[in-house]
Image 1: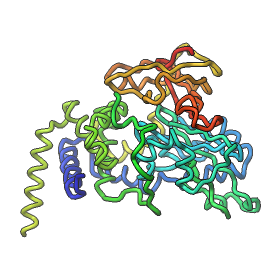
Image 2: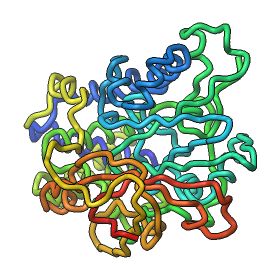
Image 3: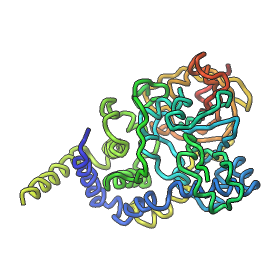
Image 4: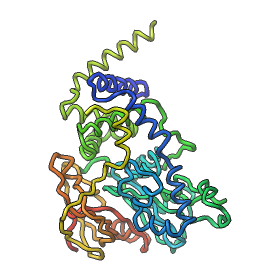
Length: 193
Length: 108
Length: 115
């Protein structure tokens, strides 16, 4: 494995050449990094899910046309152009993977965690989703249906987790805190209040 | 291509390693590598499908042993070289120059 | 094009869709039984090995999209329908998989033939 120093130097060398050639300006590089570090992330997706839990009309729009419903909430960004949201219920559990690379809905979930991009997850989520779910501590009833979504092409997928029991009295803002990134990938459930 | 990247159903990679409270980037260079790749895409020097294919062409042993953002970096370098934007020689020369600076910096 | 901060700001609004507004006929409709073609291209494809030769059913027609396999090699858009296709877990992984489990994957028209 390349050491971080070596690869950091390679990145600096490339950066210096692209700046010199006038292909990019330094503030543009900072802007891209800021976008991914601070503006795109699961905090966006959590708000979408909390709205869906609180507003049945929004939920219906989200499941019918996720792209438009998400844009309606202001999350219009790269790798969110064509979205599908799938709903977890007591009978159906959805889990998302990209077996070929690491496609991920950046607009609502940000960049994927390292485990999502790792070989063990990409290899086994497709063929042994129940084993993967067990590894994440998520028990699935034997009679439930597990649906794997391999986001290999142009659509990006997000899971609408089940609204946890005991959250009935919570408003939309309080619900946001129960929605984790992992629950929107489908490897876990939402948090209990 | 029937490459190492096509991982669905493969056995033997072991458990899924997770990190609590994982940062978006673990090193400053990771954000830069992503930004430079996006720059190449945004500038129209190569498209996303070509870029994905470049990363698929990283030799399998290397593909598995380097991190995600190193794949982005190597994919970007492959694309820029193949599109005639930045040759491998030009990149290597800059790397040599900068590592020389880094080495002499160590002794100063 | 030189990438400036302004370019980046504009860019990260949705501009990257591969969806195209083209009048292309669909070869399949929702509910059709299909088989994924057994292709082994040396170039880029989004048809993974574990799907090739397997039988499934069209679940959704997403509409017309540019074709990644072509665009990766300077071949143009080749716009065609992209479908969500449902495969039984047992079809993909054998009798040991739970009978009710399944996998959905997005496949372009060129990857499919009638089952």
